Image 1 (cartoon, rainbow, N blue to C red):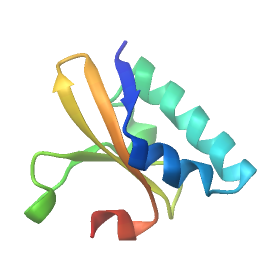
Image 2 (image 1 turned 90 degrees about the horizontal axis):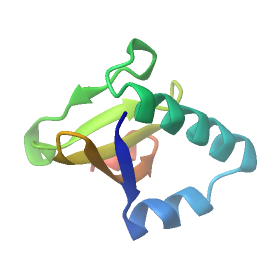
Image 3 (image 1 turned 120 degrees about the horizontal axis):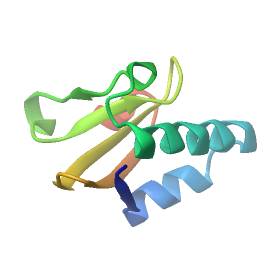
Image 4 (image 1 turned 180 degrees about the vertical axis):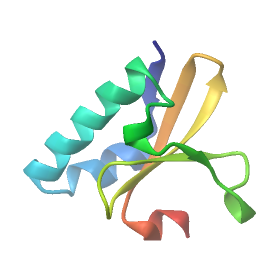
Length: 86
């Protein structure tokens, strides 16, 4: 089990999404809290200017970028399509 916290940027981006997509994100965050490495999430380390951060999939188009504060604490930084990597 992992504790999850949300940066204001994430909350703002999340609020602008459709209700269906927000529901899907909530579902994926539950998976993430239970098992951050669940194969369904496709969690992976990022490279380049986002080195040190990680990402997991919400669906084919949307991703959540996060960082680990400690072994069992993650901070969700942003949510969106592949533009979240920019």
